[in-house]
Image (cartoon, rainbow over the protein chains, first blue to last red):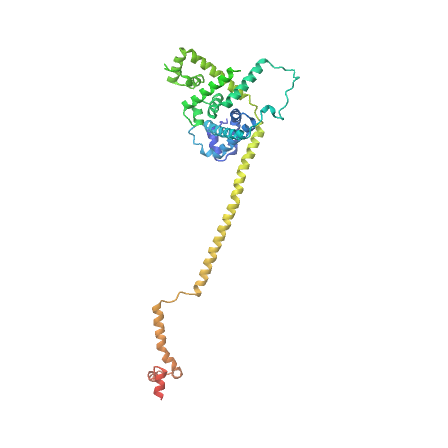
Length: 189
Length: 172
């Protein structure tokens, strides 16, 4: 019977440049890394690049993992820091070069007006809610956004604190404030 | 019982993070506070909506994703090696050149050493020149001395003048 190695053990093997261990860790974390990066950054392309950058950082600094926190927390810290830095950079850049709205993109496929599937009203409401939610997430501070997304992803307040390098009670405040803002946005739908 | 509403503890409570005393205190508060019970429900609904939004993210082709990741990783390692290689090669070359020069220098020194032996001390030179000076008189009468093969004629040698000038004086 083959025993599945823990993330921490795999990380130690990655530190010894074990390519197979690295592949296993990537397979375990690729979906949640991409999902979290996509939710923080709001677009697929940046999420794709940033999540891959996080794995590259993991490979290059696996020897620095000391086991004081779980591997999951350590890796999330790498990922979230990369995403927050990227957001700060892109916001600075957008201030100089304002981008056109996503609906103006020529590559966007046109909506078929003759579609036979009108979709239930509920879907429209959900879509509006998701749009409002997305917009409200974008208005949050980087730490609040990361905190609420990690909470939704299943991390505890303690782990969120470790990722954001703050106390557990500060992490709780970030989540609480973020949820309060998101509630306001959802009430408006 | 909380004096104030335990707002920041409500989400951790609803997600089962609280333990022991804190959990008991929040539960006690919730029994008597409609507002906080409402907050627990609405916060859970928001977090579920966020979770739902996250789960609807269209995932990439993971095989292509990992292949690209491996290429990126290899590309990051490549420049480092290329950066190192010439430096390393240059380092070895210069080290070899310095080593060869040192060996050549040692060889030159060791070959030249027997040709130019170290001179004797100054005292020894002075003594030798004194002795040579003393023999000069004898050598100046070499013509007489070379014909003397017998020890009996030693008296002749004894009576030789010490310098040629003396000999000339005696003869004149």
